[in-house]
Length: 195
Ligand SMILES: Cc1cc2nc3c(=O)[nH]c(=O)nc-3n(C[C@H](O)[C@H](O)[C@H](O)COP(=O)(O)O)c2cc1C
Image (cartoon, rainbow, N blue to C red; front, side, top):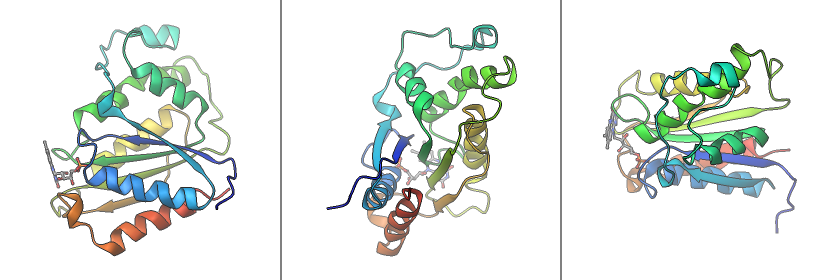
C-alpha cells in the first residue's frame, strides 16, 4: 500500500467523451501520481453546466464573474486551493472542445484579479501544471493552439507559464493507444506526483 504524501492534484478533463482517449490518458496519469503517494481529484467539465463568458466587464471591477448561477463555481473554488493541476484535452478543430473552452474563457475573472486589480502578482507558491493532449491526425502544429491556450489559463490562475506537455497524434479512440504510450502517461503522472 502506497503512503499518502499529502500532495493533491486537480485533474481537469476537457472532453465531452467521458470514456474516450483523453479520459484514459488522465486515468493513467492519475494512477502514476497515486503510485507516488499523491491524491487526484478529477473534474470532468462536460458533466458541468458552464456558460460562456459574456464579456460584460464585471470581473474587471469586482474580480469575480457576474455569472454566479452555473457550475463554474465548482472550478473557481478548485482553483482557489489547487497547487498542482493536470489538464487533459483532445483537439477539436485545432482547438479545445467547446466545453473546455468555456472554462478557459471564464478564467477571465482570475485574469482580471491579476492584471486589472493587481492581486496574486507573485503567483501560487510551488504551483505546477501539466498538459495531456491527444488528436486523431498528425499535423505538425496539432497541439500548438491548446498548448498556448493552457499557457494563458495557467497564467491567469497564477500558475507558471511553462509546464510539461505530453501529447499523442493519430489516436482517435482509446484502443489506438499503444501500451508504451499509456505507460508513458503513467510515468509522467508518477513524476508529477512526487512530493
Ligand atoms: C468535433 C471534432 C473535431 C475534431 N477535430 C480534430 C482536429 O482538428 N484534429 C485532430 O487531429 N483530431 C480532431 N478530432 C479527433 C479527436 O481529437 C480524437 O478522436 C481524440 O482522440 C478524441 O479524444 P476524446 O475521446 O478524449 O474526446 C476531432 C473530433 C471531433 C469530435
